[in-house]
Length: 192
Picture 1 (cartoon, rainbow, N blue to C red):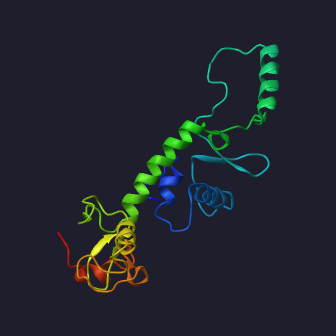
Picture 2: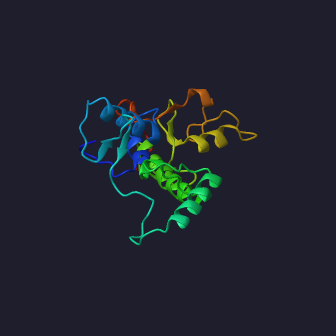
């Protein structure tokens, strides 16, 4: 965390932790701050012992005085919408719109594909596109998982390696991951 930083982007932070997503990391971090394991000046404890982000809040952005009638009507609107009417709202309580969530999800997917691919820039020799999920055959040829699936399921050449013309089943392929890349790197025949 000290190396990467967070800046409120827990989804991006969590991509380096297998099996975890952003909100889980954020909740666990808040738990560590609450229990005193970590001291973070960006968070503060309220009366009930909950930790809240001290940064910008989403309510009362304007500096003008709010008339009591206006304040009362805005409270009613918030209750109708379903937002909390408590005075301790913070960025942690903010619910982004569908468009913002979709944009964040797209950015995270692009980053996740980049970091989950141990062979970035490796070109699939059949589709001539970058390999997304690389898989290696026992003969040492690497293609994308989807390309292998299409090649090995074609009528007339079913379960035949497109390079060696030997028998090859999908179950014989090995997905290349960051955990096993060093084991297979020297076996790759079609390395650029």
